[in-house]
Image (cartoon, rainbow, N blue to C red; front, top):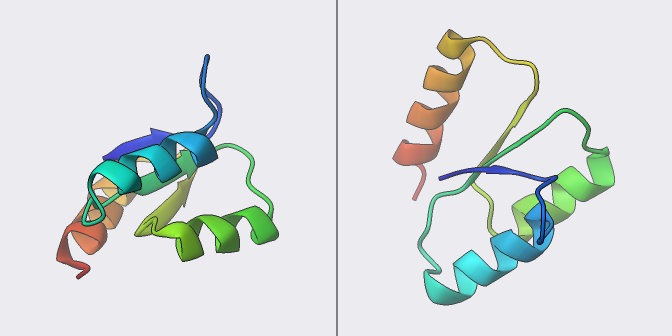
Length: 72
């Protein structure tokens, strides 16, 4: 799953937590145009499997998705 940090109704951090409560094995790639290192680290500790900054090229996204899918 590719999850943006800024969404209407629920922020990405809360959404990540909720998804992982329902499916602890979910492979979630965080995408954001702005993410401080401390938040990045926190999201990874919470269970996100990767991060890709916006804007990105399709090749970069493809590579990152492959990395996330190969993560156990």
